[in-house]
Structures are given as structure tokens and as C-alpha cells.
Image (cartoon, rainbow, N blue to C red; front, top):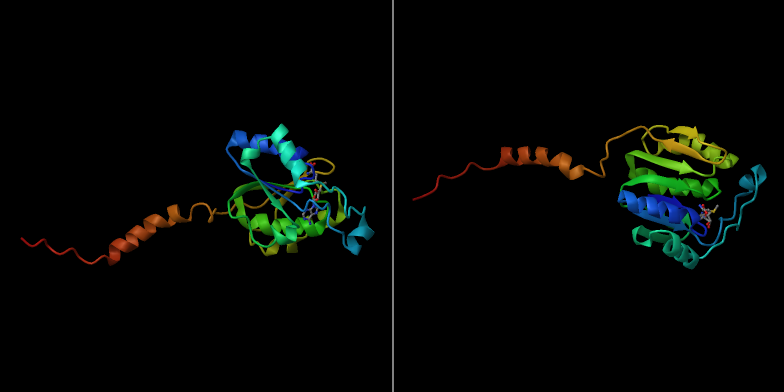
Amino acid sequence: MVEAGCWNGGASAKFSLVCKLGGYRLRIYDSFEGVEPMTSEEKQRGYDFSGEYVASDATLRANLQRFGAPDVCSIHKGWFAATLARSPVAEVVRVVFIDCDSAKGTQEVLLGVVPSLASDGVVFTQDFHIASVRDLLLDRRTWERYGRGDPGIERLCGHLAVLRLPQHLERRVLPDRRRAPERRVAERRVAPPRQPATL
Ligand SMILES: C[S@@+](CC[C@H](N)C(=O)[O-])C[C@H]1O[C@@H](n2cnc3c(N)ncnc32)[C@H](O)[C@@H]1O
């Protein structure tokens, strides 16, 4: 599971307990410098969250220790542009929870998680009430680069929506198992005939 935007870790602690029960790992991403300064377009269209929700990774760690399961967590400190947007998560991702209050941040998170999203993976956004985030997620161009089609989007309540991409083959999960029989057949075809044993 990936959580993008954790603040003091109130949700992270709960997510970590669920991950522990289900045998998953929780990757937590945050700048720990608050919400990135918003673009002028975002400011014009809604509330300016710039610089809000500053927390420290020490507070997050303490809260995970006290209320959660720190042993299943990894903490990735930095702007999403420098973490998730730079390279997709190396493991298969089943659940994503985005709560960063900006369209730019949301887009950067998608770059890091969508290529790694399991066939039945789900992305939650806690920012669906923010017009620029909603526009980003409803824009077909946002999804073109991933080649997985447009997501189904369901608004669960005021701020929260869940996105499900069309199902696809999990190439990142099962490449060896799926290719192995083919490889074995090919190897058998090119194998040189066995020489009769000499006495
Ligand atoms: C609303 S708070 C998260 C609240 C948290 N999910 C909870 O339930 O308590 C937003 C968080 O997103 C982080 N954030 C916002 N924009 C970011 C960005 N571009 N890169 C990294 N972190 C960012 C902020 O530092 C902040 O901790």
C-alpha cells in the first residue's frame, strides 16, 4: 500500500495495522514541509493550502510506534516530484491513498503508482472536493500515458473518491511464471540431439 501525504501519521497508523493484518507493506511518502506552494491557477480556483500541514518524520515515527505497526512501514521523505514521480514503486501496489491537497502533487503520485498498480488495485483520493484535483482525475489525458484506459471514479463522500482502472495482466507480478513454460518448450526445440552413450 502507498500513502501519499501523511502529516502526523493519524491515518498511517491505522493503515499500518490493516497492512500488518493482511500481510502487506505500507510505503509512506511526504515532504514533511507541508503542502507544496500551489500554482497561481490553483490559488485562483480554490483555497490556498500552500505550506499547511507541516509535520516532522520524528512525529510520524512516534505515532506509528505508539498507535500502529512500524515494522511494516517504510518512510520516503521528499517532494513527490523527487520521489514517486522520479521512478515508479518497485513492488506491486494494491492500494493507494492520496491526500496532498494539490493537482500537481496528485499527478506526481500517479506517475509513481499507476505503472505498478495491481490489476485489481484501487486508488483513493481524499482531495476530490478540490476543483483542480477533480479536473485532473476526470481528464482523459491524465490516463493516456499509462495505456490502461480511463478509470471508473466513484465519489464515496464529500472529499473521498475511489478510482479503479480497467483490469489488465499483471506483467510485473508474474513474468517468469508465465514465460517459463514457453521458454522450456523453446529450449527443448533447439536442444541438440543426445549422443548415444559410448561403452
Ligand atoms: C492533508 S495533509 C495529510 C493528512 C493525512 N493524510 C491524515 O490523514 O492525517 C497533506 C500532506 O501532504 C504533504 N504534501 C503535500 N504536497 C506534497 C508534495 N508535493 N510532496 C510531498 N508531500 C506533499 C504535506 O506535507 C502534508 O503532510
